[in-house]
Length: 406
Image 1: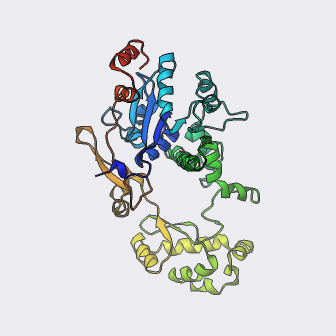
Image 2: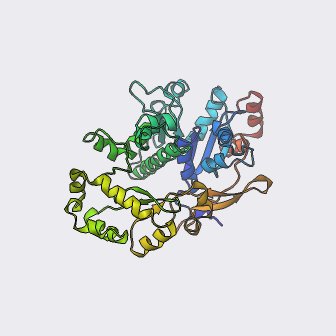
Image 3: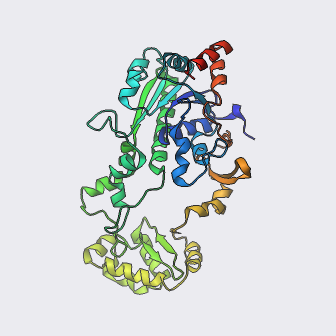
């Protein structure tokens, strides 16, 4: 059982005014490790991510919404209409007790209602204000709507590099760039909180999907300035020790070596290619490429792997401490003994006795707890309790309902 008083972020209060995945996932990580997160949603509609499961063929019911639950587990849900003065007043009262405010609203709308950092910093000098955008806060594209696919994958060129040949661009996994960016925002918030402990000052933290992708693809960015062609080619790889090969049972294996000189003779002998060890063209990777023998090397490795099935190679390479892995399937994670043993996934029961394996936040502490999964409730399920906590009376809450401010 979780112990709420024994979590690393216990006592931290967060107000989230954000939608979809990236910013909410940062708040989810804060929540998972003990922070109290109050998620503000528009009454009636809620976060559009409540309906995100539709395009993924995943349930979206109030008590059976696993995609939404992953990014919002443990939060309190308050439905407040911030377009109305009374709703704005309620939000400001929440901010008076908050340590962190997280938003991904676009620049102009958030300025109109006085929730931009410049409007808040004097009133809340200790507030950590975390702002996530698609392309950045300034520049010609600062006002553009940005999503995972567009700002993270397409603008940075990652899609074009992550595929072989000249085929149709692939579809990235849903939310991959969002979750990556959310982790950067999460780490920025933690640094802001740490700095505030020393200085007493709040700060604005900004990042974007575009910035996160540039960082994640930074090695390729540097490489692109020396090599115009970054597309991978398994038949002519930069190094035959870092390449895909197919086993006799059809499974693909990827070799992974960080030290060519140290590994190439050892691996070549395991593959039955002893003659390579004495071939001067293979002496080092630079010589291999310069000699034009790289395609030949890849072809010989491919022929060797094709002689045996994946289980044969698994045993042999593990026995000889060679780094490799087979191309897996996402669905196999649900039964992956390594993932289960390390508590990277956990079974969760939703409505109708539906049991699913759900991913867990990827950081563990030996001395602190982490929140368990619970079913996320409907839009505004905690509104009255949240407002009561900051001093609203039953009569005041009823008036807000009548004015459709909550």
